[in-house]
Every structure is written in C-alpha cells, then in structure tokens.
Length: 364
Ligand SMILES: Nc1ncnc2c1ncn2[C@@H]1O[C@H](COP(=O)(O)OP(=O)(O)OP(=O)(O)O)[C@@H](O)[C@H]1O
Ligand SMILES: [Mg+2]
Image 1 (cartoon, rainbow, N blue to C red):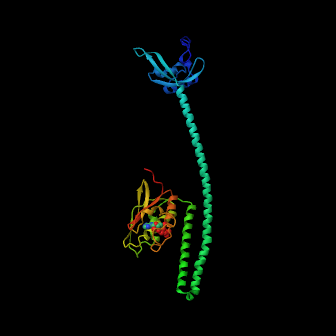
Image 2 (cartoon, rainbow, N blue to C red):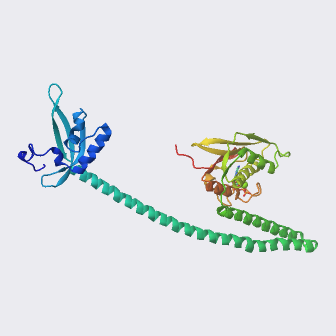
C-alpha cells in the first residue's frame, strides 16, 4: 500500500515518517494538552494512547514511498508480554480514500442543493416584491375608487333625497296620495343607498388602516359596548351571561368594532324572543383563546354558513330585521388582519354562536 519493501524500513525509518509531518505535529500538540505531558511529534504521537492502554483509532494522511498521499484510518494496539509490559505496537492503516471521496461528493451535492434553495428563495422574494407592488397599485386604484364613490355618488343621492323632500314640503298638498307615497319611497331608497355606500367605504378603509396592537382589558371593552348599546334595555327582557374573558392583544379600536357588530347582531336576531339570553365568553380552541358571543335568537341555516361573511349577504328579510349585510364582512376583515379566524355555529330557530381568535391556532 505504501510502496516500501521491508529492507527500506527495518531499522531505518519509523512509521511516523510515513505520515504527513504537519498532522503528526498537530496530533502531538493535541495529546500534550489532553494528557498534560509533553509528547514528541514522532512515533510517540502515533502510539501514546495505545501505550496507556487506551483504544486508539484515528484519521491521518499516509505518505507513500514515492511521495504520493492518501487518507487513512489508523488503528493502534499495544502488544504486551505475559507481565503486561509493552513489547511493541501493531499499527493497522486502512485506505480511507473511497469514503473521503463519497463524503466530498455528498458535501458537493449538499452545497449544490443549498445553492438551488438559495436561488429559489431569491426568485420567491422577487415574486413577492412584484406581487406586493401590484397589490399596492391595486390598493391605490381602490382608494381612488372609494374616493370617487363617496363624492360622485353621494352628491346626486343627496340631491335625490333633498329635492324629493322639497317637493313634498312645497307641493305636498297639491299632490295625490300616491304621488306623496312614491316620493317617500324614493327618499327611503336614496337613504338606504347612502347607508350602503357608507358601509362599503368603512369596509374598504379597513385595509388601509395600520394596526396598532397592544394588550387591553377585554371585559372593560365589552362593558363599554354594552353601555353604548343601551344595556340593560328596559323595554326588552334580555339576560346577559358573562364568562371569564382573558386580556386581548390587538387593535382595541378595531376589535371594539368586532364586538359591537357581534353583540348588536345577537341583540337584533333575538329581538323576537321573550326570554333572550346572550352569553359572552372565551374558550380554548386548538390552544388559542377563542372569544364568543352566543344567543338564543332566530339562528340560520348552516348550509349558507360559507356566505355569512360576504359583503351584503343577508339570510333574513329586510322587513323582519334591518341591516345592510356588511357587519360580519367587517368582522372577518379585522380578525383576518390580526392573523385570527372567525366562524359561526347555528341552527334555524335555535340561536347562533360566533367565535373569533386573534392569532393563529397552534396545530396540535
Ligand atoms: N346572531 C345571529 N343570528 C342569526 N343570524 C345572524 C346572526 N348574525 C348574523 N346573522 C345573519 O348573517 C347576516 C349577515 O350579518 P351582518 O352582521 O353582516 O349583516 P346585518 O346584521 O344584516 O347588517 P349590518 O351590516 O347592519 O350588520 C345577517 O343578515 C343575518 O341573516
Ligand atoms: Mg349586523
């Protein structure tokens, strides 16, 4: 393996000369530090551990007689006589080239893989940047659209409503009953459309508004909203059951809108019940806090649940329950912007419960 004949070696050179001298020096230094005793950078460095009875297998570069090199694994065993005195050493060197080559090939392959992953990431970043700028320009367009909707549409609407009123005031007595009624219907339509436009604009604005997340007291917020909604509603019989509510982390102003929309829905859709019960609480869903508002109102058919959060989606007739159908779309947008989720469970005539989380639910 090394190209030496026995006569080249016997009493002429030690095995230390058949290895890379730099590696022998490094090994001697390392052993000196490990054993706290000076070890010569020659044969002693090769056999020191074995001389102490320690099993020793290590990697070194072997040097052939013609100067060529190859990586080897060296195993050293001390040979002892019957009184355990060392009488020699058995050094077995195994050519390690094949394994080294395989290792190098593996390293090269993994470097190539890393380069591909890096390239993919760069491409992805590039694409994300591109999409973000497309999205930004779409947002600008939406803003311009919202602006023109608010100004261009509201002005003629106000004119329709206002002039209908003027006609009613000035010429009302001369008009037949039908004429007055039609004008009343025109006014109600114009006002309804104004409310729809306002809701749409609120909804569109939600995307642009920056979130300001902070911890806040959920109980205080809910009590504040109930007060604003006129709690305890002396004209109605509504029982409120409070569960425990943990602190929330999020944009308080936006989450106030969420609670307001859910609680006013619960109040609205229980208004036909003599004994309305609203339950406000929090439960754990897949490790996350899920706040909920439960009511025992009119409920809805779960087959339509996927439409619930769409803009202008309503499951009940406007004659029975007022509204524009934007409340839950606003709720969903706010919750999504917090990284959470909103969902509902209901049954016709048995009430509904709306849940929301404010962060991603850890997958268990
Ligand atoms: N607690 C509830 N019980 C029964 N149905 C509900 C409840 N909450 C919402 N819904 C149904 O979902 C629809 C959408 O609710 P959403 O709050 O978006 O609109 P809305 O209440 O009709 O109008 P608004 O925009 O004024 O809130 C409602 O029209 C109603 O049919
Ligand atoms: Mg509503």
